[in-house]
Length: 148
Image (tube, rainbow, N blue to C red):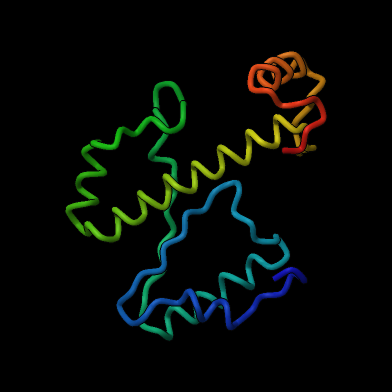
């Protein structure tokens, strides 16, 4: 919650029924306070186990091209994706659709931050980025200093 507390009521909401699966994709943008992370996973694990369900973590490491290191290179018709779909069409179609939606939201969020100059850890706008960002803003009609 907003006060940095773990809500049992909200955890109960995401715990699946018996034989269900709770799937998480962990990544650099997983928003769990480091001081609460261990407590959260312990409490959630106990709840999932008591419900007779399972919890799985999904890594996005499979979407990196091993030769170039570029992300997002797994084609939609990749053999391993087809095999996952054969195992459980409903689950993997849902996860793939959710991943596409989340990546779209993330991309829009990142573009908005870069175009508005929102301070972000590790980003130095003065390191040669200003002219490129100004060009994009000019091309699409974003006024300087715009937070839109």
